[in-house]
Length: 46
Image 1 (cartoon, rainbow, N blue to C red):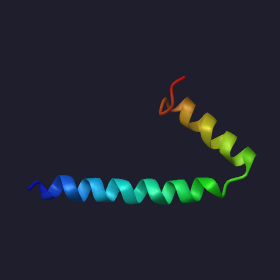
Image 2 (image 1 turned 135 degrees about the horizontal axis):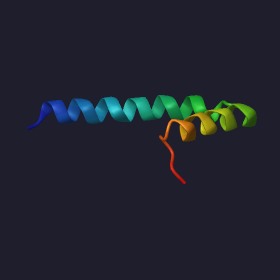
Image 3 (image 1 turned 180 degrees about the vertical axis):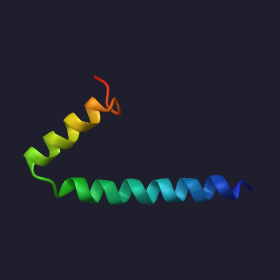
Image 4 (image 1 turned 60 degrees about the vertical axis):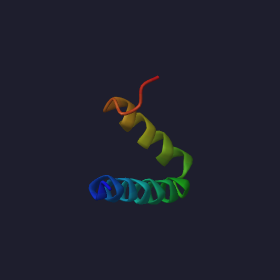
């Protein structure tokens, strides 16, 4: 078994869960600011 991969996958899932939970609480202006910041940093491409 590849325990590093399992640990990485678990950590990744945990981080995604925390981010999703936090993002759900943002107001529309905060979401827009986050979105444009991520687009500007090229994390999101349209």
